[in-house]
Length: 217
Image (cartoon, rainbow, N blue to C red; front, side, top):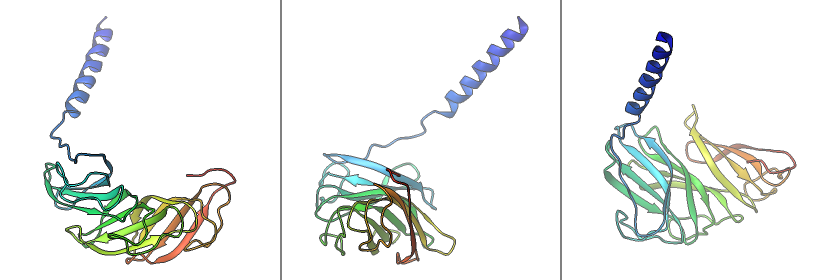
């Protein structure tokens, strides 16, 4: 009986500890009058947060800029308690989706995602196919410093990226493109993994398409 009581006491203590650990410290709802999706978040060196996603909202609620196209990149910088410090809406006349955002060594940010916008709005390069990788480097206040559109004649969607030890970037996503545009290998099947290594300015250094005869993503 003592062992059974001890067992239940331990269970209660563990559950109580978990409940304490999951208490909400603060929260903030950020958005405009239409659809806003948050896809990536990272804590910044000042203790705040950088948020990256896509927005269909024009000026309304927390949104201070109109969209150029359907969906645009929307980046929001907050302090340590989620209060907005600045924001920027970046996009072309069609659809632009952020899937990843990183703070860079210089205190700026790298935005990664995919776009089917042509030259328009903030977009300075044509699309090669339907969707292309689109990477954007900003300064510490979200102002664009450079950008690169990377893709072939099909669908190329960037989902993940990281900073490499040499100060460049590694990009990972899926591709359905054949040899065309920036792509130097045909897809093996439907979608394949597509990894692209760039230098610190987003210029391609090497790439590799990896996949089998089916869908790989």
